[in-house]
Image (cartoon, rainbow, N blue to C red; front, side, top):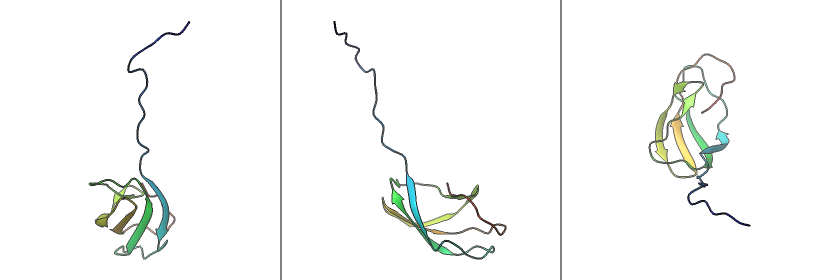
Length: 79
């Protein structure tokens, strides 16, 4: 026997994903113009360099151009 339950499951869109970062390095003083390539970038997106906000200069659904903030030297995570 089958049962029916209305509104029991919701499909949601996948969140944004970064697939490449160009260039992948810059000075600790910041100011590097970077292209973040990926999917799902929506208007008003925020980019954090290890928790430090970057300036979003331009955006499309698959490419963001940002200016890297100043940060201590080392490898960081983007969010």
